[in-house]
Image (cartoon, rainbow, N blue to C red; front, side, top):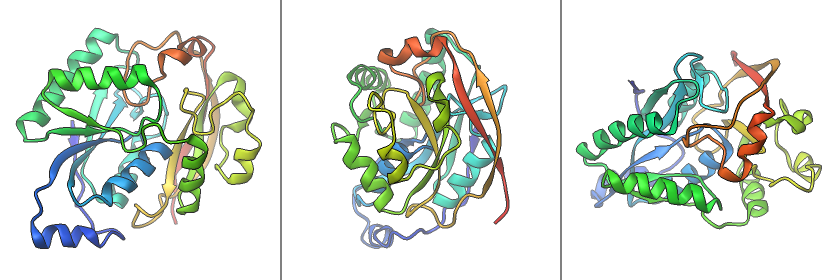
Length: 266
């Protein structure tokens, strides 16, 4: 399912330079989870005049109409894409697809991208080697290559850069033992109070976020805080952009806390 929004100019004047001088650009899809790592990776990619990002690609739970794993409503995902100004491409998935089913669905869409002339797929991963290898292998099967703009960067430096750039993000999903963090906006003060045993970017699946403002957006995405919900899961069966790594899969058996964000007005 493809949902495209009209592309808007943002606060990146280099886009005009790219169009004026017709640089040879690399056609890409950007794997957009709606969270902070995606937003920071996209920020850096939009500054690269050699990259032409054709779509924001997001996997969506087809039964719930929410971003896979993050639990954010489709309406807010669409608002993000409209504010960023890049067409949104949704891949609709069953709630808990098996790996074989997941790979089959994703493979069909990757082949579609390949047929459109797209050559690269961009991810916001930072240090999970197993996930990086998985992505590269699946892309290679479709004749595509991967780009990892944040790879191996220090996560403390990344979260500080993210906040210093003016991005704002809410924690919308946490592992069961981090309930006190869900529904909170990430600030430097909050980061300083994170438990010592979690990664400050949640790279091991400790938490997931929703970015609602920052330099890649024409305007903020407005929402209201809704209910807190606990959902118990068995070990994850898929490996999409928002799923847990193998290292944190055991946590999924205990479940996750979600904070529902309800679309709002300015």
